[in-house]
Figure 1 (cartoon, rainbow, N blue to C red):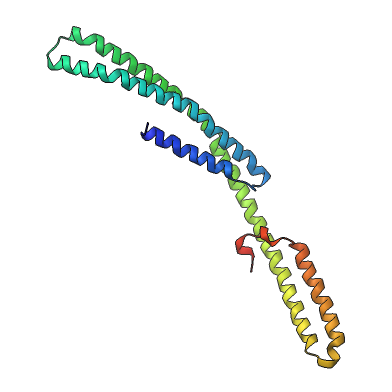
Figure 2: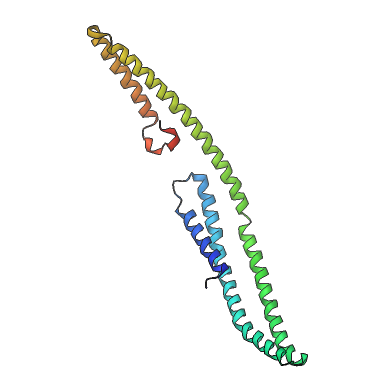
Length: 196
């Protein structure tokens, strides 16, 4: 089947796979990820069942509609047409009820999704604040490192008497470099905008 519903189902499956593939999320985002994935996967069985009902309806209705068309073209009486009309009406009513039930079921399943969006908004805001704080701290530590380098080069420039100064500069530089690395030991976790 290659209709609109099949395409929508395929898109929904692709979205679920993308959501499931997300990793390294904050702990509070895992519950949102799980809820959204469960919601999406819960939609597939009723949608596929409905799709099968629609296909069956079409397979039954097409021959009946062709027969009805043939009878109408032969100017058949209403009495001759009525059994086919009643059959089609009953099948249509059944299908309409099933579609209504599916709509309610999908609505119930997706009712929690807006709450997920608000939870993600809070998480996003918190992460942005943490990112800003980390950026400020990193900038502060980097400026201290730059100041230490200036002192290092100043002491180095003292010349022959600068051997004592050089030793002091190396100690200061090493200490500040250690402080920077201690604060931020693994820069691979720094978001792209934080690395200078």
